[in-house]
Amino acid sequence: MDIHQLLDLLDKKSLTPEENKRFQELLSGNPELKYVAGIYSKVKTVATEGSHLDSQILGEYVLYKNNRSEKTETLEFLVPKIEKHLHECERCKNNFATFMEEFASVDNFLEHRINSSGKSGKHTPILIKLKQNKVIQKTTYSIAALILLYFSVYSVINLVTPSYKKDFIVFNDTQKFTSRGRITTEFQKGIAEIDNNNYDEAIKSLKKDIKDHPDDKTIFYTYFILGKTYLEASKKNILGIYNDYDAEKISAAIEAFKKSIEKNTGPDFQHLNLDSYYYIARGLLLLNKKDEAKKYLETVISQKGSFKQKAEELLKVLEN
Amino acid sequence: MKNNSPTFHSFSGEELSLLLQEAVEGNPDSFQRLSQIIRDICYSYFNSKYKLKKINSMEDVEDLTHNVYITFAEQYQGINNIENWLRRVLFLTFINWFNKNQKNKAFELDESFYISESSRGSLDHLDIDKIISTMNTLPEQKQQILKLRFWGELKFSEIAANLGKTEAAIKKMFYRTIEEIKEKLK
Image (cartoon, rainbow over all chains, first blue to last red):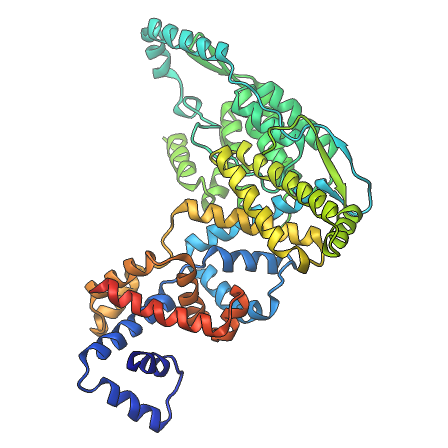
């Protein structure tokens, strides 16, 4: 039981002279207890200095920030510590942003599923499962064959096309969409269509989401995804040899990004506006408006947007 | 478990509150109906996460739905507002799952800590690294107790209230955790 006595004493914030005497007695001549005291002290150091916020604490904090916490008393004590930690720890800060999005997503979802005053009823499908289009897959193989066939022509064109007009990937395979709280049928259908590379259909769904829910607080995200979809849809690949872009769609993309910035006024997703600046710059470059594009890229760099590095690389290319 | 449904229902808050009240009063039909609604709502929420590629498989969708249902069955008698309860449980269930899948370490010290401690000559790096890796292998609840006690400076009674356990159980678990670390380091 000496070990429990020792842990009891170690756990006290301060010791009375009697407790201190007992503490010294326990340690003297007992290497095992000395070792335990050493471990206790190091565990305390690690837990104090090296703890990341666990999902439960961070989740409660997100609920607290949204006035939904049921554990307010304990949290109020922890809030200054949590906020100090968030200020210093990049990983927990990112988790916090993700969790805030998730909360908005749950909130928005339940808003659609539970009517506070209305009656129960049937709705249109929330999710539409789209089958993999094997025809597209085959077409892709064919295009790949043509690319090989015309490789020499491609190489020549490749040499004369500026790098910012080549290999511009808006959506990549590993990208995971976040919903930023948008859970409407139209938004999800739009995402599913993007997944299947049906960009024109995706544009229709996203525009319908905007038309049907113009005042939703997260509608800025639909505008953002619409902008990206327009950019992707603007690509015109001629026999896999030459990349051209539809100017009308690029303009529509730029407008959508500007609208996203205009609608995204809350404090939680301001970083998304810098992403919009980056994509606007990419669109402007495709329209050969280099000077205007530079201004947007400079903003991304100065405000440390997530595309800062890519913006710096593009600026270098433009200045050479 | 329900498959992808071509349509979904929305429910009135009033209907859910009434069903909850009847279930708490011991009406088995209301309990069953409300349980089905909870399952339906959770399934469509987690399914939407799957479609957004935030949940990797339909098995996870079903597991998470089941977890919320179990929580509901355990807690329904103490629920005041079913919509608030659902909001809280859906959110916490998903983020806990999300966090587990991230496989992030719960404890780590950055380089600056080692540098400052070295300059004071106060830390044995080998030991502290071993302790960190041992702490990272502890079960989630034990990690949580260490964090709340040391980092959060909460009393055992406060930790107990947060984790829904008795103060004595938390204190016992805390001491056992220290002993467990000691044993693992041997």
